[in-house]
Length: 274
Length: 141
Image (cartoon, rainbow over the protein chains, first blue to last red):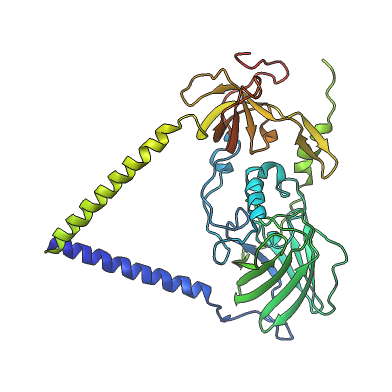
């Protein structure tokens, strides 16, 4: 009888916990109306400020377990901790050949990841790298400055620009849909990755980004990714960008070129004969 | 029939099912002990013969990487070197590394000098030094 009672209590506790978890998850999924949002003179949400993602999406867009450091001297500092994914539905719908290439990219990430070589990060990767980035909002254009490789992007709001050439950061045109900034970005080259786990795309990448204020200090960032050459269907990633509120906070520059020089050009060093 | 009796019956059935699974699974493992199997080897990275390619300033291996001076899982030095595929080992060239992967035995009938292959799935450096890649001779040669 005592066992049965304990069993019932456990089942009840589990059920309540599950219900709570589901409720919280559903609330997180549902779009929230901004309680209070800073606004510009024309009534649009004012996104100007320093923002930073707090997720581990920059390591892997998908759920990931811990990985040891490739070099033991780095110990725990060089290890990859586990992290929660930001892909809606969890799976990235790769075509079969692309799924194989993603696996190869992951295994060979030390030689293939463009971040290691200080190449421009591309979009959407720049938006969730672990550095604060600056948004400066104007009526005609919205400018975003990223610390890594001192990269940037301009979102054209008034006169749409056509992507004339494939570029690392693409070409972005924006519009407001209510309180949501919708950015249509294309014209990318095929050199950038989505993360350090080897998730990749081709030059046919087309992004529709939606930035919606959740509060004055938090933005929902949602991206629908299309690339018929690599994926079987469009897919979405979703995360939160937080306002950096530290006193005198600034966007730090990260001129990474000097740190990649030995990797890229060290091979050409001449050693004297012994 | 009481609830506890039902639980005992379910437990008994689960135990039988688990035992049956073990019984069925055991022979297939014993049948092919030398076939492709996951292993961890510690050795020194040599070979590769890295060559620059024009764009974008990459060094690509023009020959296979070879794991020499290999310590096996049984903590004995292996007389055999291993050809490493699956991961570009250039970041660890000249270093002692731990390689996890699957071993594919050599086929001496086809090529007497062929090395067994380890298809790597994880590589990281380990404590220890390596002899100079230019001067060492793989053990057992």
